[in-house]
Length: 172
Length: 192
Image (cartoon, rainbow over all chains, first blue to last red; front, side):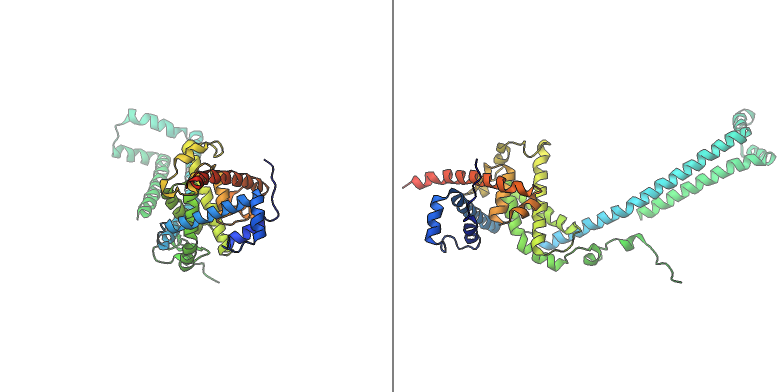
């Protein structure tokens, strides 16, 4: 197909766009249209599309703009919540990573310097049945052990407490 | 020394439910301006969507989604003409997404019959049958050029096609639909 635009296409398009077709069309342009296929196509297609546009526009079922406005605002708000939530999630992951690192470092330190703590754990079920009296007694006899148990226990409780408080506030 | 302001999560969020939407949303339009824009743009947009998709129900859905996305988009206020062009761009992309979804393939690979089959009888008068025989992209180009009166450059912005290719694509599409319209009208002319 050879693309051959006509120099009078703009003239025809302007008349169609202004709604002056065919009433204001000069006779010589009308004669040109019957001879020029490009302009003929343009006139036929534009006229048909403009008619179809006005028919379709009158058949349109238009809802109220207020509902769309509020829907958009709620969507914007949700997007803003999501944007703010991303750094919070990042901070939570960072805090968890730090906590895990501390726990691992503590265990590694204890394994290297306080192997007696591990042996105490091994001896515990063999030597005594689990009674609080026995535990407190052993703690009194070996003050280093009580600290080794106490610090991770308090840290774990603090961590769990923080998580519980955060979840409760999130639900509210 | 100035005390730092207390930072609360809710203070940085748009307080929509408290009726503080225009300030909080930072939209280039307030609700009154939007109502005016909607009144002037909704019908042409619906006509575009309904004619190009051939499905008035789909046009309803896509029109609503287009306006919501238009309001959610953070873009500078460049006036109503540019706003409408942007709205048509959103609608064009939504249509393209809709066509791509069922078969998970390129819009160019989908046969014309697939789209022609979904054409509603409600919109099938003079233009309907001819338009249903055209490829979706050609329908979009023809509608934007001949019904909306957009220039080649504006059509390129709306459709995302290269401006240089619009002219040739439009020329071919126009010739094809003109032939179809002539074929369609010729049997009626012969009748006494």
